[in-house]
Image 1 (cartoon, rainbow, N blue to C red):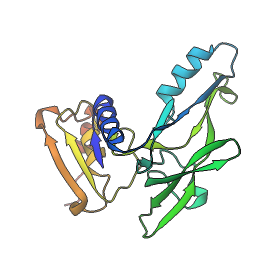
Image 2: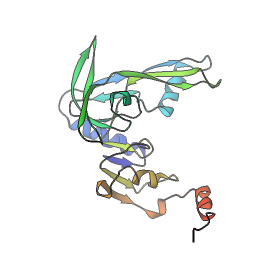
Image 3: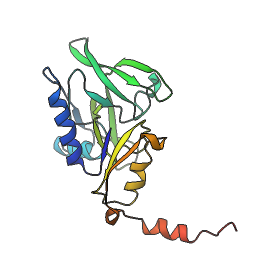
Image 4: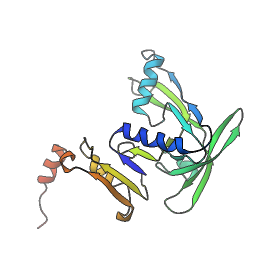
Length: 210
């Protein structure tokens, strides 16, 4: 899996790979709803785009590489960050949904038909819903941003840090794999590595053990 610093590189890689697969794409368009009186439907969709991992439009084909961006399938034994391949599309009621074989880090695999789920943003009162999005809980996974992959554990990644721009980005990208054998650094520019000043001050203030 590729990890990039910028979304545009991720979109390009995922789209290129999807276009190489045969067959027509199956598209899933998210259903967004404004729940708070101060949010319009347009603003609800914009809010979901920036704050949730569920994408507005998901295009899949048989053979597509996908990942689970949240813990929504954890109850089924598929944790956040799990990657899989679309085997087919299964009819559920009047719609078809992707049947995915996920590779599990502990070994083996699990096959599930992935259905839509609903996520929400919290309103200004701190407890009610501001807006909701219902979508199939998958994202394309030939590539991802380092930011989106936070918390994922991946057996093998190719990390491009040549366009790093944020503090902690290099650390996050390089720590997605449990082994050095699974890590491939394909782009690096040491002038782009950003260190958070507060973290640096904390480190320098630590008392040595000796």
